[in-house]
Length: 384
Image (cartoon, rainbow, N blue to C red; front, top):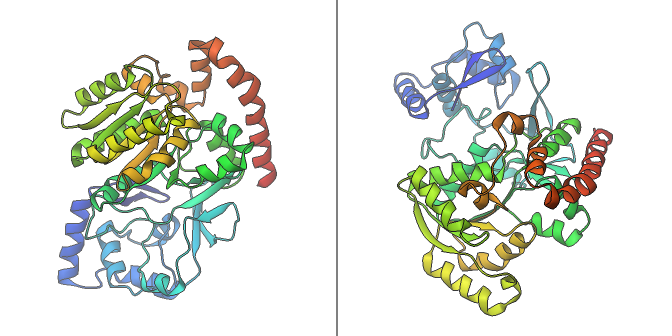
C-alpha cells in the first residue's frame, strides 16, 4: 500500500495497519475526510493524483483516502491512463494511444458497478496482503505486447492465483528474443498467448521510454526466479524444475532451498537433447507433471524452445504457473556469474556476459543484437 510522503511521491506503509485505521475510521464516521469527497464530487474524478494531494491544505492519510473511497459511489467515466512526466506531476488522459492496450476490455455495465481504486491507494479488504493485478496496460514493441507491471506485482498476482487454483504463463523477452520474434509472425503469436510478458533487458525499457509509453521497470528472469521462489516458500507453494544442462537444475534447487528452507521441490527433470520432438518423452514429462501437481514450473531450455515446450505441457498442470527462464538455472547454481548490480542498472549486463563467453556470444550480441537494438530505439523515437 502507498502513502503520500511529499508532493509528487509515495512511500510504502504496512497494509494491515492502514486497513485497521480505515476500519476504525469507518466505525466512527463514514465520511471521515470530507475534503477528499468534496474533491471527488466537484471534479467528477475517480482517482487522486500526487498533484491533487499537494493542493490540499492537510494531506489525507492512506486510511482516510481508503475510507472516503469506500463510502464514495462509483463514477461512470472514460477509462483513463495515468503517466508521470519528468517533473513527477501526474496527468491523466483518455486511453486512446494504440501503443498502450488494456489487457482485456470490460463491459460498460461491469465498469460502472466496480468501485475504482485511486492509483492502488485502497487495499482490498478481502485479501489485502496479496492483491490481484487486474488488466495492466500493455506496451507494444515490435509487435510484442509487454505488460506494464513491476516484479512485485507479478509475484503477488502469481501467489494469489495459485491460492485460487488458477495457472498462467510468464515470458521474459529480451532484445535477442525480440529480434527473433520480429522475423516470425507465428512465434509472435505464440509469445502473445502468455499471461505476462515482462521486459528482461534495458534496451526494451529505453525503447518504451523513447516511445512515450514507459514500462515501470526491468523484470529479469534471473531475478524473478529468486524472488518468486522466496514468495512460494512463504506461501507453501511447490516448484518443479524442468530443463537446464545436466546437474544445473539439481544445483539450482539446492541453492534455492538453502536460501528458503521451507521451499517445496515438486520434481526435477533434465530431459536429453531432442526430447521435444519425441512424443513418448513429452508424454512422460507430462505424466510427471500431472503426478507431481506443482504450483510453479521453471522451464529452462532457451528461447524459443522453452515456449513451445510450455505450450505443449500446460494442459497437464492447468493450475500451475509456467515460467520460461532461459539460463537462470546456471546463474542460480553459480555456473554462470551474474553481472554486479551497478552493471545491470546501466544496461551493460550483455557486455559483462560477452566478456565471460566471447566465443559463444560475440555473433549474437555484436553481429545480430546490436544492429537490431539501434533499429528498435530508432523505431521507438519514430513512434513517439
